Image (tube, chains in turn orange, green):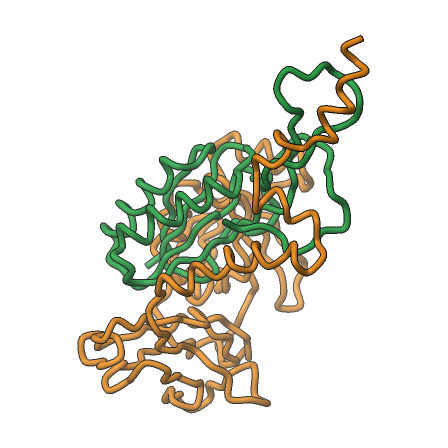
Length: 235
Length: 136
């Protein structure tokens, strides 16, 4: 069961773009609480407190207690909008939950015992296909994380969801296949990275004259057609 | 160097780079990333130089992902040619990068190695960058 976070919020009256921007100018982050068969409630959170909580990680997989005018609201952060450049939170969606509510939640996967993996010792790389996996569980029993040991894994080995020990009442949202979570990939070699160059050189042979700039950037200077065309302009 | 295998048209308009990146702004593959904070045209040579700097500093350990692709042909007129008489010949490939775009990602190396590698890689690029890491 993951720990819960607590934040203080205040109700905001006006919705929309202008009001949300005005809230941000006051060093607050607009948010909304919805669900639980109640009317949505627009709130504002303190910027610093929210940023610190979000930066701790796993914000959307921990229950949160919002203190609004002394009344406690049990919520689950469903979405955090992040500014594309600064990575600062811009808006948060909260879902009202009760203890028995079934929810889908993203749970982080953690890999341990890197030193005990012969594949990684040989220079292999842990290629994490899914850093987080979507699970369906009760709101009061959200797993904090799932840990998987890499001991004994060779290059080419994979970890699937069936290799993870799941507690009762927790099951993955994808149930129709045994999907991959991570693989031990071979190290990136010079041959591998040189492949795009070889592809670019092969392209003109395939009839694509457009690939010429990539293959020979200086070709235009020697192009007789270009000089011939430019000649009448000199007269 | 990266370049398209085939394209529909040989030459492209110059274009302008407005606004912020709409996608590719969060880490998808690795634990560390290099994010553009200014708009710019990053050409194939810059991408290749940055990739080499990053992989060589990592001593070919770990893994590197390149999340931009130079798919816009840039044309140039030859030297000492008067204006007019049509558009010049395609010279190189570039990609338009908007602020917020993750250009490179790495994984499988310690944080300090990733940071140093990105500092060397960022020096090869014509846009200002910031190093980002996955939240703990």
